Length: 219
Image (cartoon, rainbow, N blue to C red):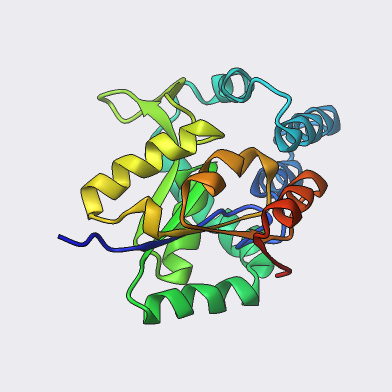
């Protein structure tokens, strides 16, 4: 049996021009939920995350501690309004067109992101993408967050692990698929697919793409 191919899309700075984490902090600031100091700490974490010089799982769990005991349904509903008002204006037209090209080709469409599904699923619905591979948060039997991640985090090599699980479920072959991403932290998955496509790349990924002859696009 010949397995299908998939089109995998990173979210932040690829399908969306901005980091959704920073857009979420802006949402919190506008609602008076966090301080300027907290915003600066998140900006510093994001900078180190982008460089790949941070223990991403440790930092994520530190940030998640404040959500312990909150209902998952509360977060899902909250992110609907956040996406509409803060994220939707930053969805790229080029990304929309790329999604439609792959849909017309019959590819399996997947968002693969280090963000949570509460951030990614509104975008998937907007673009008509059926599958999301993301960082999962632990939820207890009562539907409340435990404050911990379900490992591995969807970051670095964790993206390969989580995407391979979906590939096995949906019957597609990463070796026949493409992946669009902006970040050097996605190098493991970019090297794992048939066609890596670099979008709005950071400096290190641009250098690597030029060395490897990977396609570079500006969205």
